Image 1: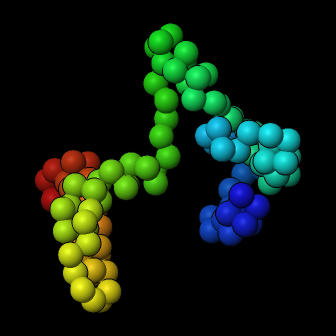
Image 2: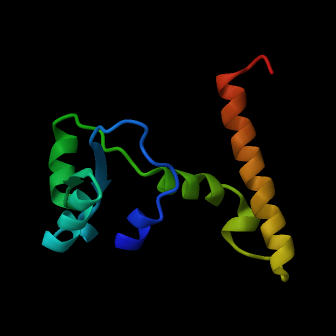
Length: 112
């Protein structure tokens, strides 16, 4: 986790505290201390806590990475790799990413 937080590309523009939601893999004092040292407010829930909160009407927020993996899994040629060369496989990844981006943009700006 230390390496991920150090490799942050975009720094916050204001000196406000930011929240960091993590799953049960990051429970414990070392992970929580690392999160706090990087200026985040930690929100770490175990799976049981999340299920209890869902029963009360709370909808869990998922990481954008999980959502992106789901979008990429809709492309059958990417989900199961059939391509022999990495160049062809990467080309399909770029094509899928472009199609996902265009679909999202067209939902926001339908007149384009």
